[in-house]
Image (cartoon, rainbow, N blue to C red; front, top):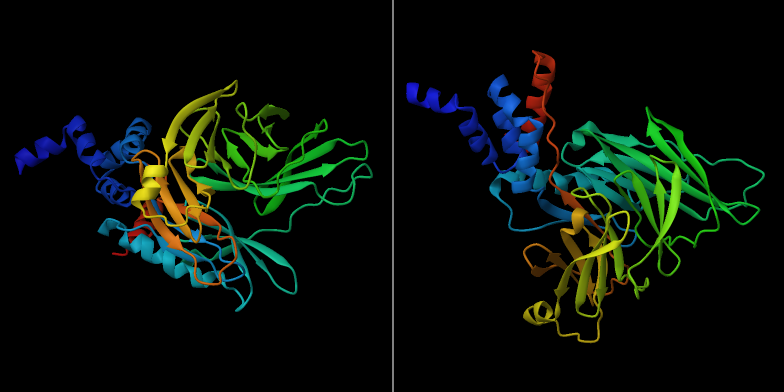
Length: 394
């Protein structure tokens, strides 16, 4: 017993033990052993190292199928430690249907929070639900603001709702772009605080290229990147309340689902993924120029998967943060390309007669973990134990 105590009192050795817990849920359970373990597990330098060794795992994805209820497709196999999380992610789908037969559409998924839209005869409702802890209920978002000004044309040139991570919480932004009577565009950026949309920024853009409503915009490093025109990106800088326009890499243009932007957490800037025939390239814009980060040739991977339809093009469906993975559509099938491991496998196949574009929203393991305060707070510790119990299913 004395030998065990001596080992566990070694701070360096304790860190090595905790780093081998692998999963966020296991790390949280370990942190509850005592305040000393909690201090080590919640240390910022330790968490940075933990994430580098064990990046957030892709658990599965939600898929929109026309006007039907979204489906959750797990990525298998998964370790048994994550069985409860995946089970909850699947079973929580039924709770999206506030009213039977009301069309439900997923708009985004980040840190286990799913943003959904439901439309009925009364109107459209936007809501957020945590799929890991669905018993917390669904948070209904207030109606989106509509600025009134005699200098604005009727109609909206562009609108988008986006999520932003702030510490352990998730906040939502609403971006609205109107054309003014003199041909310019005014951009309004609202942030949801305490259940109310509050204007965060308002700026004039001098005759920008028209944004693409069908291409994904991303919020990365406090900048919003909006695909626009045939080969441009509008950059809205939230910190500086300014905008700029950057061009795609030389010779590149937007085509049918051939390009997607990816949020950058590991570096400053934004990633761009572009596919042309059997070649996929990953670029990084570092704020000054485009850097080619990777090139992957997919012909051999496609041949290994016995893709019979040679006339079908590879189309981008969705991408993970930091360009870690890409979902590619080809014919009736969807494939998951793991950029780091250089592997690709089929994860979904459309049913016969399904003509809708099946949009994908990945579900990642929660990061960062939410630890209790180091001070003696029995209430908060009890709440954390309950949360971990919910996640682990024990």
